[in-house]
Image (cartoon, rainbow, N blue to C red; front, top):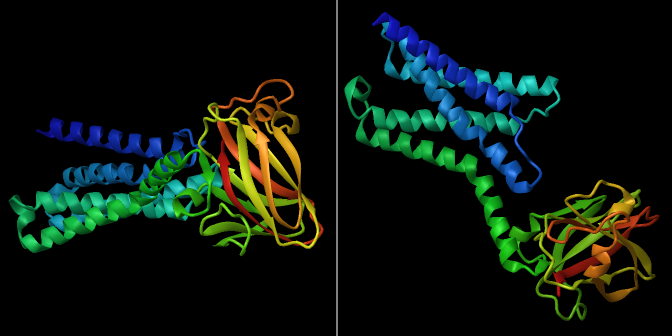
Length: 324
């Protein structure tokens, strides 16, 4: 009997250490928004499993003390929390970035798994003492809601990818918060407004309005557009300038193999006149743009439009970035 007890302690300890080392040391691919969300969300179920292992370990090692059943659950939650804090501290002093949100994900996983497990295990045996049916249901519902809340960012990114793929060959029309998740501004204020009266005849209700401030470079990036452009011949978009004079705007397009060298991507300078402007970029030019290779048109990962070292504030609107 004692041998079985010690064997269980060893196995549970190994399992808990294995989960901790996986969380702390394993670096999974995170080169897309979806993979980043998946890596972040993974903290929740992993710490949930860790908390259940700790619960079992505490029951075996402290069982002779005959504590209240709920005490083991609170101890498991506390130890899980301490491990979560320790994990973030290691990342803070190491090469990886600590993240307070990850700590909340860890605690959400531990708390939700323990709550749901207790709600079911209390149906029989000593754990059922003092636990009403309604109380069990509330703990179960609370645990499930906490878990779903922690996993919500992953679901939202999944929805964004589904929406992006369904809208293609529209790359960005700025009409939906789903597609706007793939937009990033730098050195500029970005907001979504009704299109200027009489401008952009094909525009719908909203456009992206940029206020670019003097800096080295500032603009808008579409990160992770639908990647396969092979069945199309041109990239088209509209710009409505609120400036009294013309100005230059740079556009760059790159694929996943881009090495950050200027000559390893598509670059072009656009002259934006006051009022409405329509631009067309031939995808054959994009494909041939890298100096030492051809761009992989099935793996396009970014479109950026920016002003290079603007000396004054520029205000303009962009709409209907799409392929033909």
